[in-house]
Image 1 (spheres, rainbow, N blue to C red):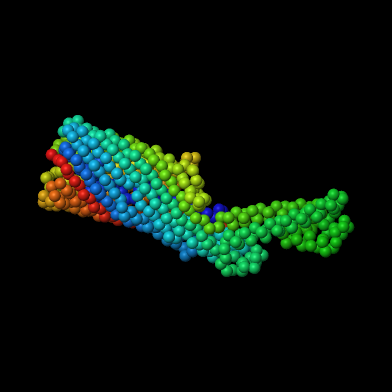
Image 2 (cartoon, rainbow, N blue to C red):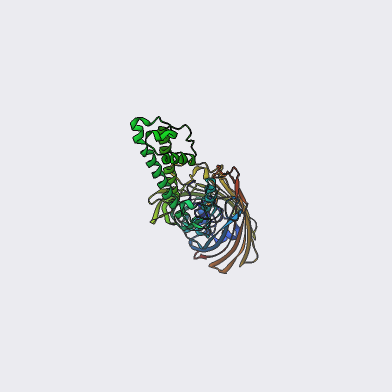
Length: 544
């Protein structure tokens, strides 16, 4: 029987929460929510999207305060036949009521100084009230595995719960320079602070074995799995001890030269007729054939049987330990630095083209386990890789007429250069090609106060089946956002936006995890839905 505990947390909470790559959030302002494309921004949110474009704001101080409220539902469906009520659905809720974006810009002459704060990755908490297939499948394997070993078992139950939260907080600073009216450049860096927390349990694992030999309670009712395996270990150890004693009891006869005497003639070397019959009956009961077996061969048989039962007792002990109640209380933390360079080109007053490159962020996460509650997977002091990929971003803003803005964006996340398995020693190929994101948006100015906008963005994931699991999956998406901007005063802008993301359904086939029972495959489907609302206030304390 394989190990029963697989209590793992992964990228389903540490990855991106909405727009962006596998682990990078790109939805970093209310203006983005309602337009979906801000790579060529020359507004205050360009602190994140286009630092080089900030010089176009003019001289003065500018501040932008944003918040997004995000709700995401993830559903995993498994057809694994031994799960209760298969196919079985597992639903996880991820909530981020506070997803801030704060930006400050100060421009003087040809220089621009800016700073920003936002959740560059993660930003929410995930809750699975019934766990996930990978948590439950090892428990579901117990009944068929025991049945295959001659212990009829048809049911199981367990209490499973998991909750995790993740925050990759980014603190960014940039310096920009206006080379000419057509060209500006910027250099900056982002300090990334990571905090992941995992809490959960796997308790009260029960099964319904029929095997009274292990104890009077095991007649088909639901009982503690750990107690059943513990009683089985005790029983098998006793059998092993008895068989070892039987083998030892034959040693004096062998030492006296009677080892070659047939067991059936054991009375000739000191055994009683009852002892001979008992030894022959025990050998037959254990699957042997005592016919023609000598005393010495009988001893070897009992010694071998003792070893076999001793091994079974060890396995029972391991299963007893694996089915005990488990609680997880662990966290991971670490920091990294992201160098950033950008350039903005304005060949005409109504056209902007931007380029931004973010270098790979190296992050080593240190694991901390509270009260030894590692759940069999989290190890106190262990280092886990939490790197973020390099990113190339291109953007274009065009005003074909005074009241109309057209925007386009393209992002490539260089995932092939990141070790997403998280292990410093493993090297699992999980990425087939880099993650791509692109989109279009438009904004129309109705009057001097009100502007309306809408936009679309599409992502193409680059993961392969090695990456896809119930704990971390990625599929192609289409997102639509809309909203409006309103000049509350000459110094204050209000932005309101709504966004919904549509995800392709993912599918992964599996071979049976217990092929000795059957060779059937099963599959999992992965579904996700996300919506968000955003509000932002932009303050212009000085502007040409």
